[in-house]
Length: 432
Image 1 (tube, rainbow, N blue to C red):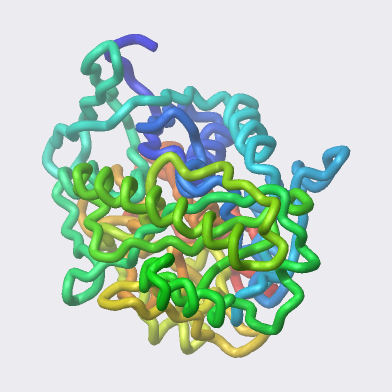
Image 2 (tube, rainbow, N blue to C red):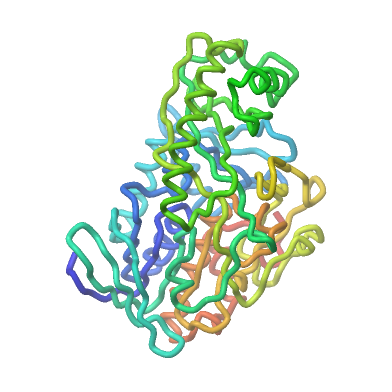
């Protein structure tokens, strides 16, 4: 890579949102650079290997688009590398379980096929502004600083650093600044599924209470989230949540990760000693760092609300359907909710207006930095929705560049039509 260069579209962050944005913009014929600060794309997929793709089937119909394309690539392999399964948690629809390494490889291949230049271990540091436009972005890798001059920037970083430094207002967490708990996940290998999941206590509350009372489990482990992994006799453990962590503070992230390691090891020992089916199992695939659910929520043209969701609102500029419950995880206390926000068979749209700032003319954002109130955010943050948000912004970048307009002036009817042509389902007045 040249140390200073221009690009049509700069995508910051290689999670599912950044993947969707980069592929969509590159397939539209534009030069795309994707920056990822870590050594692996996937975002939550990289930090919590094996995390199922939930919320991809509102009303039991696929959201379509790149999410469906990626899933189909995996399910059509011999042997299949993904499978649609019912979720074991209440009020959640079907989810996709997958082979993590094959899924990541396939995502890299889709980026390669589209012609995206992927820059790993590379961080966007500082934007330089010209009035209400991002003119350049200073970046840094092991060889030092360099400058990218983009025509359009899509912030999919999860924390929105570049958007915030560009002057986009934001909030942290809920109205009191409380952010959802962070998680460190792992797998147990060699589990006897039949024994482990034979009881009528889906969250293993009775056993967990015993471990807590004996001082062998942290008090926040009152419910154990144990899911059958993609491969037979593997169990994905998504139970260890650390509260009160500011995911924008690197020191806090490091401290929380070490605390998470301790709690994961403690839980693995407890499973081996006390939970049927785990006696001969062993711990594997401990996440490299905590998975952060919530930090900044950027201010956009429109703030999606819990009221919008509860009313099954189908926006004219809707870019993806969703029926995910209010999946709120330990914001102010140890409470976790899975409350349905729409009736069975219902769904709502995430509007494009929630992905564009009010003023900066060549910036969009996608993923968990979406403009949403705390209730709505707890529902819209699923990985399939993030990928679809990214796909919408990548497609919108093509419109902005082709028509030489600001992102605020993109024809949203045409954008929705383009997404429908990309097989995104349930948009533009056509029901799922």
